[in-house]
Image (cartoon, rainbow, N blue to C red; front, side):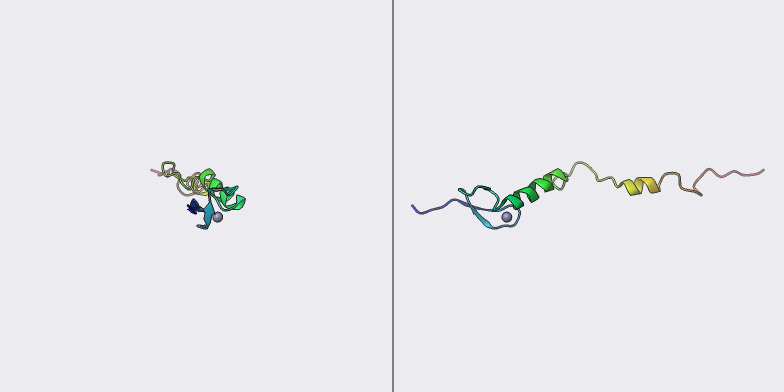
Length: 71
Ligand SMILES: [Zn+2]
């Protein structure tokens, strides 16, 4: 039985053996990259991304105020 248990690093796709220190990642760097993806919401689908710049642009825009008609 010379079978080694290997997986592919979820970040870069390199082969990783189960005895590796950073298993299932090939390195500490790849693990941090993967954690960063979760933290930044890449895997989240339910929450929409709100761009603060877009919100600012729609508020207090000149020319969009109520127009006064002089009768
Ligand atoms: Zn990797």
